[in-house]
Length: 96
View 1 (cartoon, helix red, strand yellow):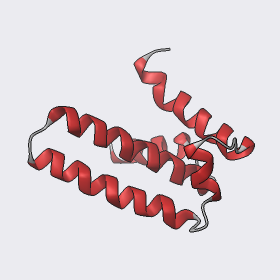
View 2: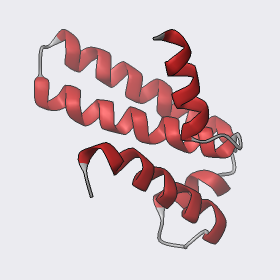
View 3: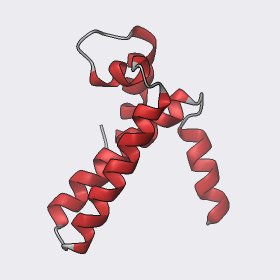
View 4: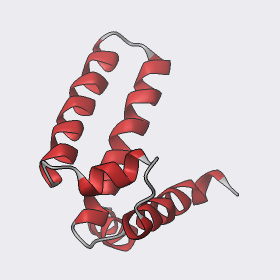
């Protein structure tokens, strides 16, 4: 797998967890959480704050880590909303 394919692979795993809801999966827990999508929205807020603090501290390792957490939760939100990476890519392409 190439680095460029990692988002596609991660999104495929998220979609699989959404459908199969394995008991030991954090991703599946997000889809079935009692708070519904608010659980993911709260995580996005938390991760964005942590990312901003890492950037303020100029901590490159933590910036990468928190960015990955944010992107993961963003992809979960897209899946919850019935969207996919095509939607994200189209929006980014429009801004190019």
